[in-house]
Image 1 (cartoon, rainbow, N blue to C red):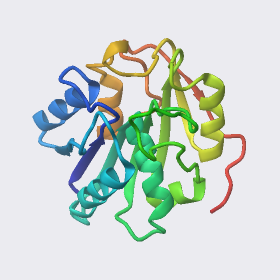
Image 2: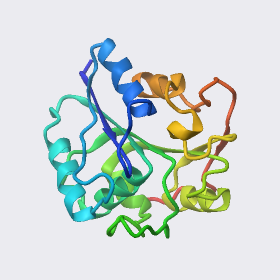
Image 3: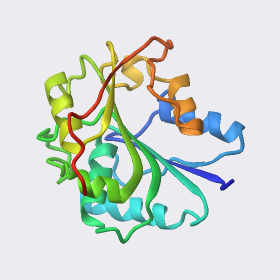
Image 4: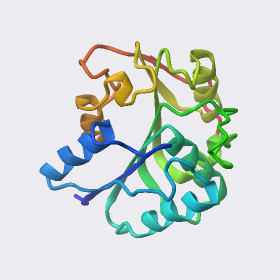
Length: 210
């Protein structure tokens, strides 16, 4: 069995000490899993041209024999989608990817440069990873449920909807999150909320062939 390497991709402002990405990294290290949570330059003012090379550098550094698992949050999801759409199959392919609480495709922020709009190319997404899954929360100020369903359809991925999950960040109470640890280690789906309550899973109506 191959070794696992987990890459966590933070969003705008990074992942503070109580964020689920920090918690997950700590849990994985306790189980001797190789995990990294790189700090992208200028986290409060993300620039695609600065972030994308860092992501690709970290991907290329992963041993080829390792199982590569990626979990991205918020603007980190947008970064992954930019990456997937522009590699043309030339970069290190992930085995599993989880896209957590992305902003809407047309989201705009004066301090975020070229992060959005982001591409929603389902074929490119499948070239970038073997399995990709989306998880969102109701009440997210950056992504309505209508937009979330549209995004899942565009990407042709299954989507878990967490009731009252909002942006699935520290403000929403997402520090310790056992379901994301189980997904990371074993691929367990669907992803439940932080209390273990059931979630709603939406499946794309029709999978388009690459």
